[in-house]
Image (tube, rainbow, N blue to C red; front, top):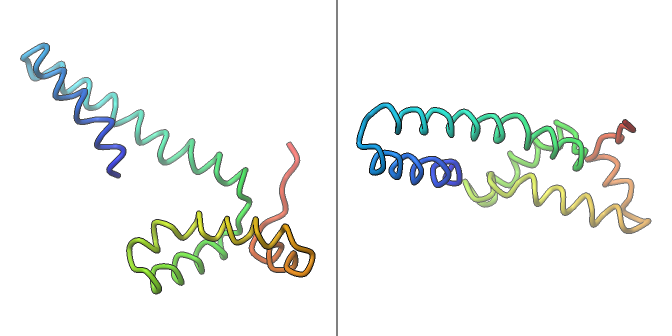
Length: 109
């Protein structure tokens, strides 16, 4: 959310100062907002889903657990923490069952 604002607001303000009209900053704002929303809601989740291969149930449980433990910060860090746990557990023979429990089988494309 903050990254999207940092990527949209300064260029919009610059367009307002540069052109001193209302249409140019509106076009810049709408264009950058569309690009940011497409990348944040389509591209990143698609790439993360392919690379992390976490099951949806594991993500929901992780969000619930880490939100309960750390509040909003836990909700933000839930997926990276769970991915780190899966990667760590996958590295040891005795905990590979837990990594398989949290992850989905990877699809070969």
